[in-house]
Image (cartoon, rainbow, N blue to C red):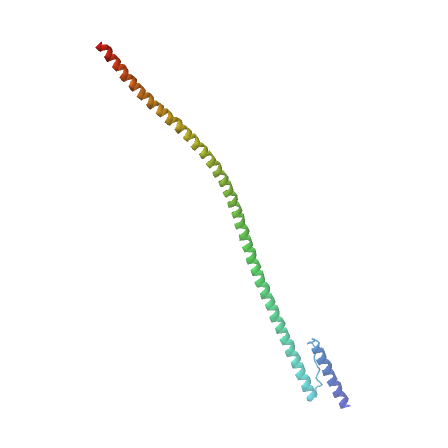
Length: 161
């Protein structure tokens, strides 16, 4: 009967090992209290199951921490990207405003240039008229001078007669 009991205990260990192989680390193998080799083997298997469970928990915890760190890093990058996007949008708006102001100034400059060209043409015409008038005034002065001379000559000629 002792052999059957030992065989049942070994079968219980095999079932426990198969459950651990499928990922059930909550399983415990009960000790018979006989302190025999099978109890020693059961204690060793229980310790190994505990070690596997603790290792898996540590791996899962480390994995979870890496995921949280990656999420935090991604969130920080996203926030930086969002800040950069806002800065770019602000600069694009300023650039558009500057472009609009430049276009307005260019149109105003073109109008001013056109007005100045017209004034220059007017001044050139005025200068020509003024120069022609001045030339005519000089001609008239010369003619008056000549007429005065002629008149004086005639007066002297009449006096002599």
